[in-house]
Amino acid sequence: MLEAGPVRPVVRVRDVWVEYSLAASPLRSRKRIHALRGASFDVLEKETYGIVGASGSGKSTLLKVVMGFVRPSKGSVEIDGIDLYNADGRTRKNIVKRLGYVSQNPLAAVDPRYRVRDIIAEPLRASGVPKREVSRILPALLEMVDLDPDVIDLLPHELSLGMLQRVVIARAIAVKPRVLLLDEPTSALDTVTQSHIVSLLGELKELFGYTSILVSHDLKVVSHLANRLAIMMAGLILEEGPTSEVLESPLHPYTRELVDSMKLKEVGEVFITDPSACPFYAHCPRRLEERCRELPLLTEVGSSRRVRCWLYV
Ligand SMILES: Nc1ncnc2c1ncn2[C@@H]1O[C@H](COP(=O)(O)OP(=O)(O)OP(=O)(O)O)[C@@H](O)[C@H]1O
Ligand code: SF4
Ligand SMILES: [Mg+2]
Image 1 (cartoon, rainbow, N blue to C red):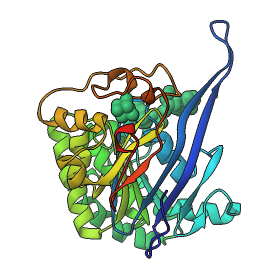
Image 2 (cartoon, helix red, strand yellow):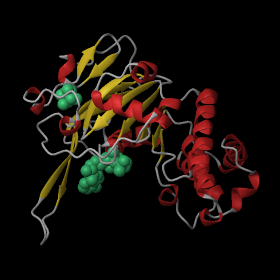
Image 3 (cartoon, rainbow, N blue to C red):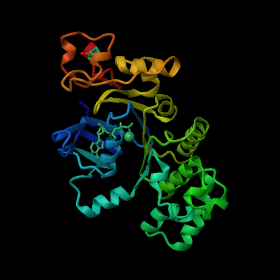
């Protein structure tokens, strides 16, 4: 279990469960999807907390829960000690206003009729920043994300995807967010643009020392920026620890495959057949036939690591 340490975390997520319900159709009966199954973690001041997992592992759902977009069926999220889902509407709105969000698809994140000036200015205006002050801040924000001031009057379709993602990042940092939430910020971009955006995020982190959560299916991207890492599969955190330790000595067999894949090979798609077993059961080279049919708990290993695997119990 996570203990309350001497330092209060900026984000505190405890035992969060999310279930989506799909209505019945002529082709199938009503279906429930357990997107999150008891996620717990802390994000500390000025830390970048990285979450890595394959498609469908629950990464975006986790960010949406922290953003206040998806109410969990169980569990809690605290930002600076305030319980997001038990706060009154006004308090919750004020907390959410202080969170910056960058989604994986910059095209879907902006109104195609808005010019760059209005896209970036939107959260500043919503926070009551006077018009003259907004005009003063905008060029500085463009400079911070390495965009030419001339783009200010362009429409989204007149920008490349990489430029548009820089605009979305400028909008997210405009209000000096308490926490910056980055959902696969590079996945829609080509490889060269990806590396530019990763360096930009690194520079901004140096500049502002912001607290952030970065989600990606790409361990390489996350390990460049994150201080600590969580590895997810099937709505579960399988392992957590300081980035350097996880990369140097991965504990969970799935993490080991991901780390190897950074150097050697791609990790194949993992199909989960039995939700009550370890989600890596069918693929794990080290599985214990009977024991691993039961889901292990996330257990502390040493002072800084947690892992969900029977090999460490
Ligand atoms: N609104 C929704 N309604 C029904 N099911 C959903 C909804 N959103 C997500 N899911 C399902 O919940 C699970 C977790 O989805 P989520 O989007 O959080 O995963 P992810 O790790 O972000 O995946 P990706 O890498 O593809 O973005 C998936 O099985 C997904 O299909
Ligand atoms: S719990 Fe068992 S199947 Fe799952 S990763 Fe550990 S050894 Fe492999
Ligand atoms: Mg996602």
